[in-house]
Length: 230
Image (cartoon, rainbow, N blue to C red; front, top):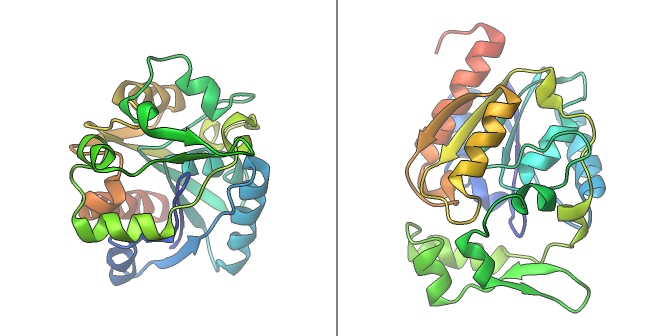
């Protein structure tokens, strides 16, 4: 099956460094998207363009803000299902910012800094890693730091369209120790989307620290869509 992997805010395809090889080894065609993060609409268009390289039905997988992207791209008829990994799953007319504002601020908020043009980036101090990404190795932290980019405010404040999860099979993996996107928010969004939900321990960096569990969920989802036996 064609699997399109979509990173979150501030991220790059290195988010999937541990997951992609496992999916390829299982026989899936894996496509990695690099979104510019200038606007939600722009990232949706960029990710939708990646579907043109897919030969068959597509399973979209989004991490963090990437969930807002796949929620919109998933309306495409080529998309068979969606997998959210500690990700946003907004409803129609809802933005990422509107979701988080309904809950107490997550611990990551004290590490966020705003740039001169309103863009956002997290400040990766030793305190940040100790509190937010404690379960990453030093090597993983270095890779993340090297590729990290600011995210325009528009990716958080532009509203979503009709959510694809309303009409397509959906799975959700909750990061139970997440201090970036509160687990309660994740569980609430998963329930609203009617997603088949599972949980893993660990931080928001789920694809990097739990690659086997993420890949297993994607494989189960793909098998459910295709009728193939794992």
